Length: 159
Image (cartoon, rainbow, N blue to C red; front, top):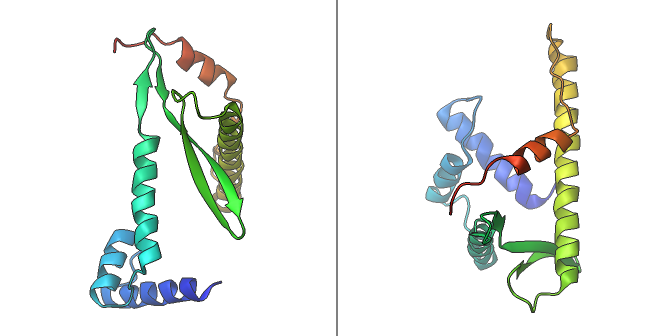
């Protein structure tokens, strides 16, 4: 655990002490509370990271439509590491100057993220079923072949 994480946990506990030990916590409310009391002062790097995250979100939300009506995400990221830092480089599918290798890596990383999400989901479901032992345990099917085929076959809406 880092010193920063310890600092955050400390003011979360102070927040809970002030507002009661609520089961559900709103990170925005805690952040506003901590910032207002001077417990958390963002450094310039954190501010740049927030702006960069906003830019990445805009990239993530940029969709275009092909002539035949298929909607696609235009901007794709690949994560790279430099030293101890990792960051995303974004490429536009419609920019012929972005190398093919960027998209090979980007799509591969997205697939790995999906697999990782599925593993975490299955673990959560398994632990839930073990802890709660419901009469009807939750079953999670991880084969998405039919789901994808069905969605691909749906009629496209006019652009």
